[in-house]
Amino acid sequence: MVWQTLARHLLTKPTMRRGPDQNMVAEMTRRLKEAGAARLGRSLAIRHVAAGSCNGCELELRATQNMIHDLTRYGLSFTPSRHADILLITGVAARNMADAVRQAREAMPEPVLVVAVGDCAVDGGVFKGSPAITGGAASILPVDLLIAGCPPTPGQIIEGLVALIEAHSPERLIVRDVG
Amino acid sequence: MRICGGEAWQAFEGEFIALWTDQTHAYALFRGEFLATAIVDGAYPALSPKHPGANWFERLALDLNGHRALGVTHGRTAIEHFRAPDGTAAWPEFASPAVEGVHQIAVGPIHAGIIEPGHFRFSVVGERVLTLQARLGYSHKGTLALMRGKSPRLAARFAARISGDSTVAHSLAFAQAAEAALQMAAPERAHYLRAIMAEIERMANHTSDVGAIAGDAGFAFLDARFAWHRESLCVAAQAAFGHRLMMDMVIPGGVAADIKPNGADYVRRALDALEVEMPGLTRVFEDYASLQDRLVGTGTIPPDLAARYAAGGYVGRASGRQSDARTDPGYPPYNAYELNIPVETDGDVAARIRVRIAELAESARLIRLFLEDLPEGAISVAPPSGSGFGLGVAESFRGPAWHWLKLDSGMITDAFVADPSTLHWPLVEHAATSGIVADFPLINKSINASYSGVDL
Image 1 (cartoon, rainbow over the protein chains, first blue to last red):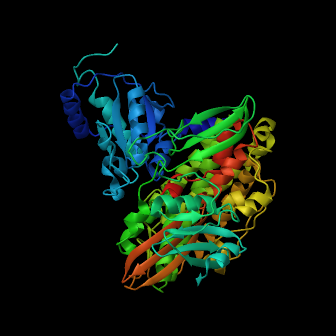
Image 2: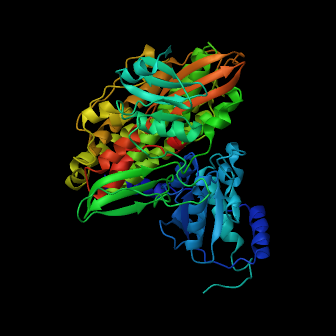
Image 3: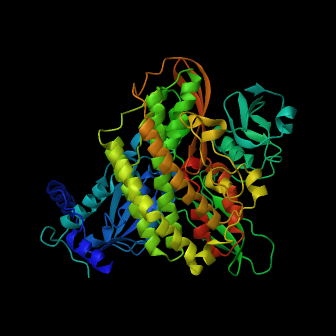
């Protein structure tokens, strides 16, 4: 029994590792340079705030953590703490969440990268124009990275986040270093 | 629909499902009866003194449409709690029970996990929870207002985003409401494809939720394995229907696309993998005393309370209610099949898990049957233009989702959506008081009420 399991595992390979889209990386490096962004390390903690989603994006964000997509192998992990490097926002930017999102951003120590995940967080998505929303994370905060999709697949989310890490790697982004 | 006077409206005995208003009338849906009463001076007689489940709906009617319920005993809001008329945003007041040593714990609207926003206010003595008040509305997107003035086909995109985890069920209920209003029927093949998607969605939610509850009780292994099975169901959904959550696939008049070649094989393989592993995973649930200790007797919803709130889905079925919209009132293709509906009576977290595990097997059985019996033919017909109103229901994984549509010359003039969570949130508030603070994540996950589905 044990030998069978061992043999099977010797023959299987880990799932494909995702790389970033190089065009996306180049574009993001340019924008981060323009913004004079401070450099973070390669191991980043993510704080998620839902600002009026349908919970589709949350399902796919959670799926990035499962053993198939395995977000942690890219050095990324979710944290329920304000001590995080990335503020990840989903949802339409509902008016009822605006204060909470602003407070969450203010509570985080600098530097912080803000990522909007899902069509709703990009610009309001199908809800664009509703008076109950301001439409997109950028209507509340400056956003560094948009990951579109309704909802984006776990693979698309990971590719976006990996591109963000790549874009501000030391070789690409020579800016003020933090600590 | 029966239009009645205020007294008959308030006196009606029956199982309350939903209440809403449009410009002229207040509507109340009971099991097997649909009532309306006129709105006079922006008000209608309250149903909540007799039917506690009406409470949240009355708050929604006030916040969404400005219609007051006369004779309500509650003063809480559903959506508009933040801005005073002068624009200031005062932090809301929560009352504590007058007990010595009581203090409050505030949680949210930003939660620790990757979940939707909502504010929970616990009043506790030590670890013991005395009361819980859930303040929702943070996800309010104006969905119902966006549906107005659009054709059912166009508005289906909003129905698909009422709650992402039950996108198929809500799209289905919406489509059935539109089809009822336009007095049309979807082709038979579409009924089967809709049901296959709905059952995949049910299984995907059951697997991830059951695993997450175990994860909260320290059983990371179960969490990992069930998350793996959820992923394989999502991959199968992608392969068969082109979208991992099958969003926008069910549309008024049918389905948006046919099942892909080999799609059925992907689905069957995902079911096979789950069925092979389920006995082992179920045994872990049953065999570990430390896990059972966290689940048994936790978050109990007694059968009489579940009945008063007409609890649906696994919440109702774990508390002795044999209710399932697939058979009562029933819709195709389910009405041509015999369904096994698991029922338990303990009403605790463990019972809800047992019901959901039993439903996994039943959904897998149904998917195989539907794939085998899938009739040939068209997958959709274009909805005609027309006027009228229609009710539609679909059994989402958490219970019956009801949609009501009023159409005028093919355009939606009014709509209402009752997610089962609207009746379940008061039960979350109740169940939380049966335990300590540390039990709340288990209790909350075991009921898994939707935020977006209630905030609308």
